[in-house]
Image (cartoon, rainbow, N blue to C red; front, side):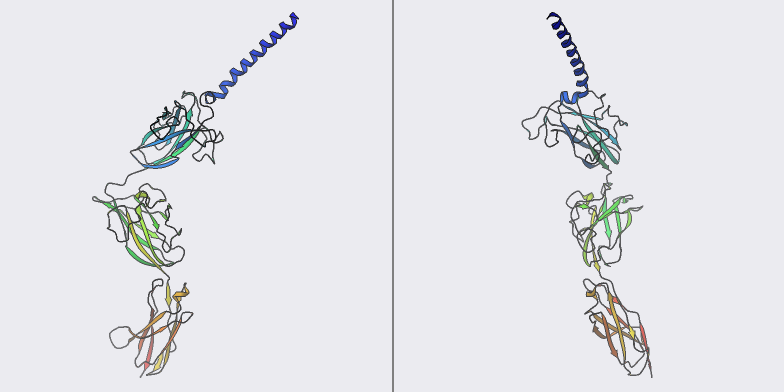
Length: 416
């Protein structure tokens, strides 16, 4: 019996030693995350933003539950941030020397937010460009311990990195843009214009202030839901015309509005100085994203960084003219006929055609002598009994959706 107990004690002691060794090995592998902060994950906001240089951007870290569905309060937790890109504070990208750190605090019962789940840090951007901000939970409070997922991308759903989402790392972006010079104003001309549905219309845009023209400014534009609108919408989104032109010396550039959709009618076109150099349109938002596009056509010029003009699109038309005879006897009858052509049938049939003639021997002057109306396919025909040699011309006037057109000249000689 004695021998048996002695062996049991030795076996138990050995087992205890093995367990102690395993515990010593496994606890460090579990890391301070499990020891200190459980399975909390991190969300940083804003996920993306833009700001003018020489201002401060604030990034906020929030501790969340394991599934990332709700804040998970815990005071005294450090959240580290490393900034790379145009405004890297320390010039390196090491994740063991974070650029910013904040610490969750005890909750303040007088506020609506839970300070024990969030904290914030800020930095100033001096350079135009893009920054990437990587945040992570500093579980052990030791910066020399690499705890961030270094391969996670800003869109963690498509590029989660080395650790499945949600996790203790999150990545955001911050874009910095330069200010327009003080007092910069925009003016685009012509204020009102007419173009066909298939033509491109050019506008002369100028950005200037009291000291003169300003070069290097990109101009964006949006068709506010009128004829020829590329996206058939004036809703917030991407600008219809991004970086349409960039001002040169003197502050001017030529901005082309091309045809789209082939529909006719009026359209208000809003131009703005794209100070933040993006492709965004947000009517009611910031002016550098088209935020003042609600101003009317004809508003005071050079009063801000926005200008709204009126472009009316019309279906192009042609009109032909033929003569049955080129030489006739005095008083002999002959015919004048032709066709009004257009991509729109409504601009062909039922259209009023005016015929003019310039009688030889006097001052050049085309005078109306007959009118008629086109048939279902745009054709027309009239007869005449001239007394003198004359040149003839036909024309169709403009309408709200159809352009005007004039034919070539036909000469009919009268024999005496």
